[in-house]
Length: 322
Image (tube, rainbow, N blue to C red):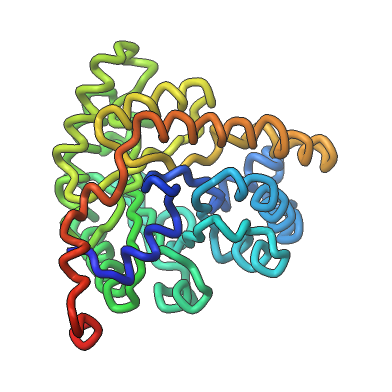
């Protein structure tokens, strides 16, 4: 049962009709590499923080929520008063990247950071990214990490958004085939969402360049919806905006509650000069968020549909049991 504290915080990240049109801006190493492909290490803290603050200020008015990282985005956005008052705040808790070999990846909590600190910072939710394959040698350790974060989120009444990213167990394969990805994404939802997860931030459950038939897309997304114990939102994974709109429509038709969209909205801006970047944020990127909002509004499912028992908690002296 979703507690009242979590329910209120979830509502802060949703639209008035209970759907999620959220902006993902917790990128760290991959953003640095995009900003300076030839020498990522030369990108300074100030450059990263400025990019995130400007994008937050431009797009948070068009989003129901925004996901920021603690290293570059969170402090700059709060100190710069860049987050729109109507936009919910979600904060990442993991260290960027992974340890171990590519076929046995392991995620970790960012040293010096925690669910408690996310709550103290005033956020409405916690996001954990993990690299996960059900048959990987690290699967049990990753599941234990999810349970650990889930328990902390229960303690602090923080909604728990989980973002599992799949990978191949074949050292010669850079990614899963479409059919393999479908099996892994669905099985991942089945295994991990019962571990205290409130919202699943899911990959599209196949490779669209291998499988162009949108009827198959719909079947795969319906399979994901059936497997997940938590409502789910779609991540953009750097696909083109046009393709992400198509994915969003299909995902929402299959039961998704919205999106947590990142690079599909803003990736062209990373190499622009400041003036051009600002113009892009306020025109193209904002229009994209509004377009996604229209698709989610038409096809998405409200998160409240997954918690019909919420009103049963509004009883005399509920506070004594809280």
